[in-house]
Length: 114
Image (tube, rainbow, N blue to C red; front, side, top):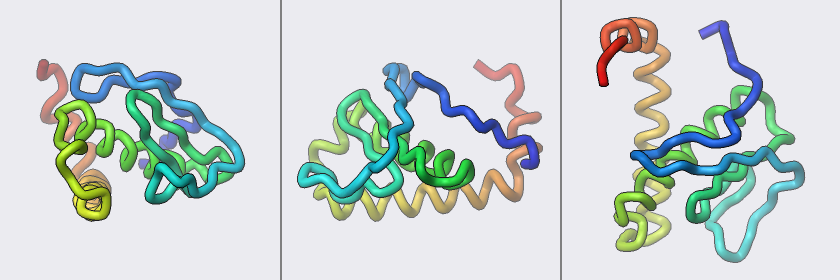
């Protein structure tokens, strides 16, 4: 898609729960997080590394919302953090590839669905 939105949403829904989103500079590894170089999700908060380019920030947001979905459903609490990261990376890669190939058709087909 050529029409890249440059501003991140300040809040967004993840499976019905509202998450706060903040773009922060100087995001770095934290003892409580496996990796926080591009973004991190803790509870209902997502932080995105504002030092990255627009594409990388949006990819990080997708990635962190997937962690958020696992958090909302309670699945995150029963997964080993390394396994969770593998699952999220796999799904993120799939969704990115799918949307690049079929995003416009998919969005047109589901337009109006509840």
